[in-house]
Length: 287
Length: 330
Image (cartoon, rainbow over all chains, first blue to last red; front, side, top):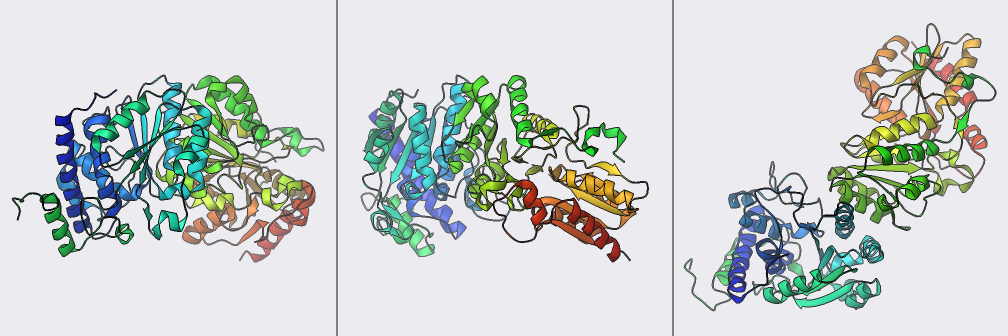
């Protein structure tokens, strides 16, 4: 179990999250395709996981007692690749190969090609089920590690997601925590217009899950919610993390057209300037 | 005559062969695996009894997971188990698994290289009265294109047990195909099973045609061959229990002598055994072929024997195909 988070650590993680967002922008610019909004929106949560919550060892990525972080919505993998690299799983330099030929960084993550990826994903709605499999295996083997599954809100339109939610409730899987990136957008528009998900919280609760709702950009609040989730027994936990898609880059925030495209050169420069000045609050040494 | 080296069940040439369903062999195999390998787990989607997962479920309740009517969930949960040191078997009807959950299996099991065995039951029109919705007749075609999957189709309950036990002791994604009804038991406990190898079950002295069959319907081919021999037509009948990886060398060696082929399967003639052999011969040894199987149509309700007669997959149809392919030989 991870330590309580103190203010100094929160400030350190906030800085890391900004660094991660910068790397997301430069990685996507280099790749020339990919998703922008989701990775930026989940930067704080990925930073919280790889630099505080997870019991893991980047030098021993297949260590059997590691906590598992399963990414269900594989399309936001740029932020996972960035934070894995920052954590030491592979060289940061390698981020430049994303989506290119002969790369270990596939457009959607693939288990076995790059250390730290627990499962192949991209097709939506399959992550919670796979996490359940890992949680059942841990239970059978009397292992104490925890399974975290990161999901998008849009993939809660997949039937498979609810098959999994139903099953985890039946099995009372308290070694499983699902995080829902509630950013309200999907490719075709706003979730509540494409296919309404609300009230998401009650849907989970009706399947016998414990639900927390947090601000997904408040690292302290998020870590504390995970800590509280770990204290829940006989129930799986869903943390609905309200996030702003494109967070940190003003012209991308809350605009669903940034769901599935990368920035061009000018847009990337503008985005990096904004991130480096913390949205105009400080002067960047790069300017 | 029957190949004496394989110690086959001599009763298959009598009026009263021993009978059992290949799914029974699956159930027995799982029980044996439960004992042998503590990492074996079994999942089922509300078809525990008819997929013969019941005995395992009763004996090893901690290692059995009932997922309800949710085949996608079953596949992906198994993928997670398989990626965590378990050997997971998923059991359902083949129309649903690998049918309904095809992409889930593709992504989370096959591409993901998770140690999961997909047991597809009620395969073929011999599923019978349930009708075409429950008769999987495209399952082999639909999984054969996946890189890295192995495909096994047992010819009887004995072989089904051996294949199940083998699969549970061998890493990697596999598709195992089982049928519903009782069919003749052609092999014995002593018959060897070698994954990836064909076996010649019947051979006349100088075969003019090679009949390749997969699954229970191999029996029809053996009976056809025995009758043909009496009519002066010499053939050989080969059991292709491993569809992928195909025993290319073994097959080519035989066909290099006969130069005429009939394929027999309770499956669409496209994409299954016939398809696989066509690809092999087109590339290496162009050969006249006839295809026994469903000719691009769905099945219907009926008794298994009625159906294989109507859809021309019985011994009479096989005999006709043999004669036709001989007429096409140069």
